[in-house]
Length: 107
Image 1 (cartoon, rainbow, N blue to C red):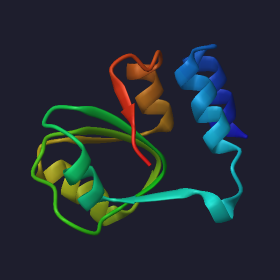
Image 2 (image 1 turned 90 degrees about the horizontal axis):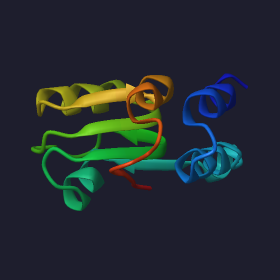
Image 3 (image 1 turned 135 degrees about the vertical axis):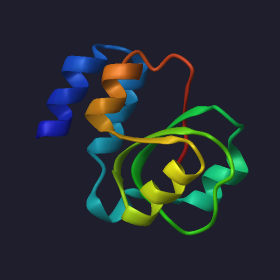
């Protein structure tokens, strides 16, 4: 699996990488889906968060966030970028925040 290789290569043996591997191995029926509205309620401006699942576009976002996830809906990407934030897929996120320091996991 491509994502598992990326986590092992870029995340190393950190607690953050182990948590992502655990989430990645969940069954498809129990994968997490987080709406933009939940990110709005549970984060602060300029925060770095990771969603171990899919980010969906329901709701609105007013905070500038760096959001990493296994996948995004098109509307979620647009809303994150419109608020001045960044939407990063797994590999991009791990290149920048591979150690997981300062990253909150939401989902």
